[in-house]
Structure formats: C-alpha cells, structure tokens
Image 1 (cartoon, rainbow, N blue to C red):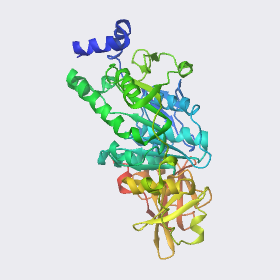
Image 2 (cartoon, rainbow, N blue to C red):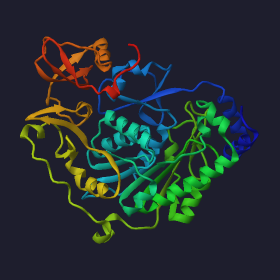
Image 3 (tube, rainbow, N blue to C red):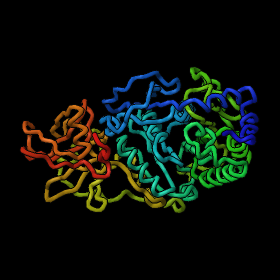
Image 4 (cartoon, helix red, strand yellow):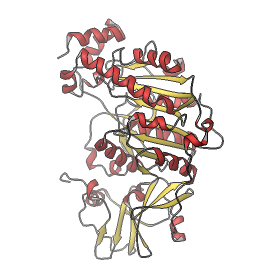
Amino acid sequence: MIKESFRKYLEEAIGSGNALVAFSAFEAPASVAVRRNPFKPGCSLEGRPVAWSSHGILLAERPVFTLDPAFHGGAYYVQDSSSMFVGHVFRNMLDLVQMPSSRPLRVLDLCAAPGGKTTDLAASLRERLGDGFLLVANEVMKQRAGILAENVALWGDPNVVVTSDDPRAFAALPGFFDIIVADVPCSGEGMFRKDEEACMQWSEDNVALCEARQRRIVADVWPALAQDGMFIYSTCTFNRYENDGNVEWIAKELGAECLLREDVLQGCPGVLKTGCGYSLVPGFVEGEGQYCSALRKTSAVRWEDVPSGRRREVKPQQKAALPEDVKGLFTVDMSMRQKGTTVVAVPERIVSDVASLEQKLHVLAAGCAVGEFKGQTLVPDADLALSIALAPYAYQTVDMDRNTALAYLHRDNVVFPDAPKGYLLVRYEGLPLGFVKNLGNRCNSLHPQSRRIRMNI
C-alpha cells in the first residue's frame, strides 16, 4: 500500500506524470536478470540483452539457480538489471580517468555486499586494463562481508581485495584511490516491488535519517579519493533528498563537480535524467529502482604526494619458500605467502598496494587461496579451482555431466574410475567447479561444506 507522503516524494523527484507510470508498475512482478562472467565459460542462460550491460541478460522467468552448476562456478551473477546501470556509469567514467603509468589503477567499492557491483566493476576493469588494477570491495557489517568474500571467490578475480571497515577507516589512506563507488544504504524505495517490508517501513523520518547517514559515509571516505578522482554515488531509492540533494551537498561542501554526460544515456531507453544524475524507475525500465550520479573531486592530494612518514608505506610480506612447481599454477606472476596454514597467491602487480592496505584496514581476503601443504604435497584450495588466473594445464581435469556435477556440489559420492589418481580439477561444460582426490574406486571431495547444495537435487 503506497503511502501518501511517499507519493508526494516520488512526484517531486520525477514529476507527477512519470510517478503515475511508476505506481502502476509497482503492481507488476519483478524482472529477473543475470550478468555473465566474461572470463569464464559455462553460462548457457538465454534471454534479452540489458541495454546498458554487454554481459547482462533479462530472463523470461526465474530458474532454480541452485540447480545450475554454472551458478556455483561463478559463470554468472544474479543481479537486477537496473543495478547494472552503475557499472555502465563506471565504464563511462573510465574514459575520463588519467591512467597511472607506474602502478595499478586503484578502485574502492565502499558498500559492496553482496557483490553484484563488485563483480561488475572487476569484469569491466579487467576488460579495459588487463591485470593493471586493484579493486577493494568493502563491507562494514561482518556477516555481509563474509557473503561478499564468498561471492568474490566464486567470481575468481585475484585483483579484488575484500575488507571490512567503517568508511572513516579509509581516511588513513589519503588520496589513495582513483575511483570510489559508493552504493550507500538508503530508504529502499526502489525495492518496494520486491520487498513489501521496505514499503511498510518507509517514512519521511527514515528518509531524513538515511540522508544524514549517507552524508556521513561520503564525508568519512572522501579523504581517500585522489585529487581529480572520480566518485560514483548511487542508491536504490527515488527521492531527491537522498539523491540529487546529496550530490549537490557533496559538490558544494566536499569539493567536486558533477559530471552529467549526455552520452551516458545513449542506447539506454527509459532512463530518466535528473538534475545531477540518472534515475531508473519501474514502468520506464524493466528492473527495480536505481539512482546514479558521478562527480570529479576538485580538492585534496594524491597518495604519491603524501609524505612517506604520514602514509607509512610498507614493504610486502616476505615471500614463502615454496616448491617451484607451485609457481607454475598461474597465468600471471604471483607472490606466494603463508596465511596461517594456507598458501595465498597475490598478483605481483598489486602486492605492494595490498601491503599498504593491510597496515590500515581489516583485510579479509586478497589474491587467491592456493592450498595447504601436507609434507611436500599441496592440497589445493577450492578457491584455486575458481580463479580465472589458474593455468589451464595446472591439474589433470575430468569433465562431468549435469547430474554428476550436481552430485559433486551436493557432496555426494562421485567416482571417476578411468581418470588418473591424485588431485583432479572437476569441470562442467569446461567450467571448473572444484577439486577431488581420486583414489580409483572412490573420491575424496574438496568441495567445502559451506558451499554445498542443501536442497534436494
């Protein structure tokens, strides 16, 4: 049931005529979309393309994703099509960024859980820059940060670092990031069609509370953005207080210019332009509600200009002494190190930056977990199978049909009597899903209990 006060807010934000279209659309069922991982095979889902995402697919109906092995292998991510528009704005802004010549481009996804925008940014950066980037995905809530880390592992990009810190912690890295994406917590008006509880809990007081919280979040992280750096601000709400109003406040109080580019809307039917950004509204687009704006910072310093005494630049951790064959597991140069009993590989391109992050932040995951040594034998980690940097011939492979793949993901017994003994990389339609230790008459599964399919297959 739409509250009259919300009706007023929506009309104020997008106009009374547009609001009528939106109110009608709130009664319609929500759409379903996925976004392919361009660096993995295996996504066989078909549908209509999302206009602003070359890898986005609008599905005719919602399948049981749990029963698709490609879902578990990170071949795609289930994401609302409107949410993908933030990635479109990000790619557009990349054209305006002066790329550093002596280090990777540094990007922060500040409010990243559960990982939809993070995986979109990672794919966009890798397509544009190869491995010349560092993407930090942060989530302050510990439980949500764990989900974020899990989804980043499934996606498999080793240049993504997962942290769990309050935005104010990033002020200890002045001018470090070239781009910051902040999909800030909001009043959730754009989710009314999916979440009846969000509609029931909406109030003008909550809008005011969210507006103030969003300003605090942005102000806290602002010092970490480099001079001339890009700031992408987004919400899943409609009202101007949390959207255009906050963007105007950022520009005036923190020092920035709004980048409202006409070419962002090219080929994006139904997206509405607001005073400072872009609004996606059900009825005009097939997805849910989303707002996005981009700004360029006009004040502050770059990390390179901060005196070394203040920025406490650190040396990378000492590399672990490991057998030579471990170094041949990857297609890129990796720095190997121990984290507890687990060997972790961090791309050489970002290892110095990761060391700086670890001095200031709570880093949950960086690079790729390789495995644990038992004597001189490496027991491979499940995340190694999912990494897009794993060398294609690092392990003997065995291909499974759908039923066997689901049995493996369910942690049922699977047998490969004709396959070589030892550690095998198991795949479904060319997509790595994990490892088994083949004993001939049976296999020991290395698929984590935490990731197993729990429903009846």
